[in-house]
Length: 617
Image (spheres, rainbow, N blue to C red):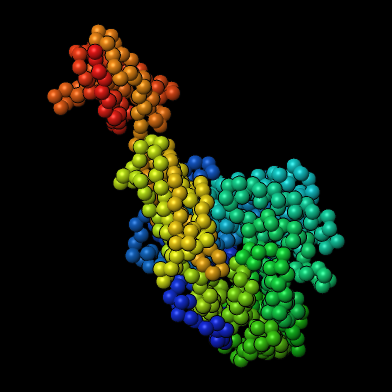
């Protein structure tokens, strides 16, 4: 994020979990409540460099990127399986590649390609998709003061920005977009917010409608805000109450409380206060708490004159140095300091002194002492903030940035995710009234779903989505919705015109995990509908009309007669027209009962009608 171009924190003290790890929590998969940003400059922090990358293919405009499977070397497989994203994917549903900058209504800068010229984005996306995680890239505001606010004030420009964003999402097959437009908060004067907020709301509503029409998600990353009745400073320009119904995620940047002066990165009371406001105006499942993976080191005083050999910028009040959390332990040792956990703020802090001896620019001997103060979060800090996720039943936590936290902090998050794991729902799908998964065109078959918990008890009252993916489609589409009965089942009658795959899905709640059934493919056999008389007078030709379903033009139809146990072609053939209709003529035949059928060839596919008999008088 524009203010996120920092680095990140560490973990020192181990903290006891405020949750007891129940047997069910240990047995279950952890709750998927972690997400985070992956800046273009740190992709290799969470993903390995693979020597033989997959082949990325975009099937058609708007279609998702597909990845041809490649065989990786043992070394590459090991790198994949031990990388941060792969080892922690069970904690996550989605990630936010921090890759794009809005420069104008029609220009979105690709920061990834600039930062990773030798590692194509399509290949990186293929490796990300291999984890099964949703990909919701972040876009920042790259315009100058009040420029974006000016764009949003004009209907045509607002609409153009929406189109540019939607086109980006659809072209790359992303699962949505995350907007990190911090210029309103930190560049534009707060006196402009009253004018900007209504236009921001119009923009969000228009973008939301476009994305949701294509089943894409809209995420907003925002600085903190508080209940306006308390008349406390907050970034009201983002209009949380007004945009709440239009967005799917609100990722609150609950860090950077102290930037200019030494202090906690994100005090826990301050953090909880903004969370309380957020969950009071929108479903808690939309809200994500921000976790900083960085710490800061401020210069608080300088005594004496520092030599030219000393590091630059050693003045009281200088911009703080930033470090990754996973470096904090080593840094404290280098600083010869003993970190202390500040219970009130739920962060670690310490102070230390550096001495520098050397020469001035004029060659005179000199010395100086520099007093410094450090703040950062550790595993206990993360545990206590993850406990807020549980307390308010939030959507989860968003890390700036993924992979900068200490391993013990990752373990702390995993412990809480296990402790509050939802019940796992077993979701089974069977196809009834279908002979070996095959049905004739137009025939009705039944999709039956069963839903149980781990102890085999049925789940009643569960809303189930019935989804279809046709042979020529690459994405699933919802076609029906049902609710489980007391025995935890649903039965849905279905008829289809062509071969398709089906699955059942349920949305996760705090109590229960989301579920997806296995895929069941139902093949459709073409059907021939015939129209003919049952009797014909000897010596008179009879017409047999027919229709092939599903409709196929220019298929070859022929009439066949059963003779001594063998089918023989009789009469002239015909070709189906644009409506898939055909006309055959039965030639003159002897008196008696004639058994016949129609056979149609469409390429290598041969279809036969049911047998029928005609009495020749």
